[in-house]
Image (cartoon, rainbow, N blue to C red):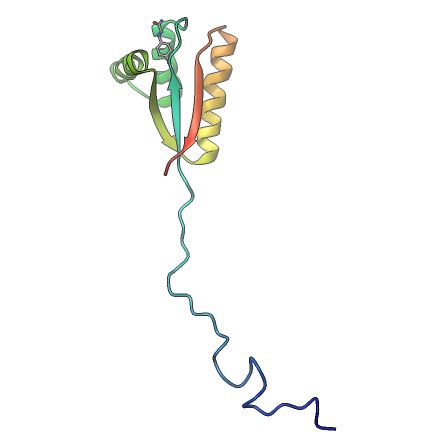
Amino acid sequence: MLEDQWTMSDKPDEGDETSILVQTRPKTKRPPLYKVLLLNDDYTPMEFVVHVLERFFGMTHAQAFEIMLIVHKKGVAVVGVFSHEIAETKVGQVMDFARRHQHPLQCTMEREE
Ligand code: TYC
């Protein structure tokens, strides 16, 4: 019985290179970055927001005051861009700190395109 036998030229995926997948680009896709956003509200004291920006985002007092005013006037601002893990940690720190001081300050994160 010759039914189960193949020659080199007619057996699929052997004897030639037709099934080799060629990697044309190195697949080194960078992990996505996340923007951390601070939202305005009517009740959180300005000085508290300035303190949050100094404490958790490493800003000088002048930088923090400037960003706080942008949030106050525009409603929202990006206060930093981080890996997913770091952004999550920052949001958690800010939300926890605000809650402990009974301020309604909101901080969120958003994937950067
Ligand atoms: N709007 C607040 C006030 O007038 C100040 C404020 C600024 C609150 C920025 C939140 O993310 C914020 N006291």
